[in-house]
Length: 99
Image (cartoon, rainbow, N blue to C red; front, side, top):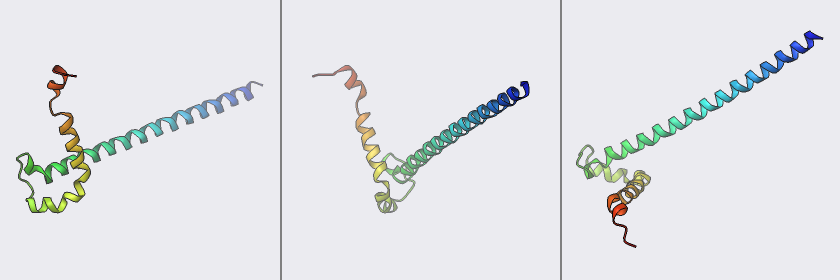
């Protein structure tokens, strides 16, 4: 009688450990995917800075090459314009809200 109970306990423990193992693996895979996506986003920002650096004073790439690459930077351009509008005058928005 005790052997059957011990065997059931071992099976339950193995199932529990398998569940924990699968949960940890899933978490690590999800975290790795998020890190890869974040790294890709940072590389896209760096590429945009390299290509359009002449706008902020870093003449790295010739403007003629920049014009050829502009269609591939549409998303980055929109993102930069959104950030510029959002960060335009934060102190003015906070301190002098006239409505």
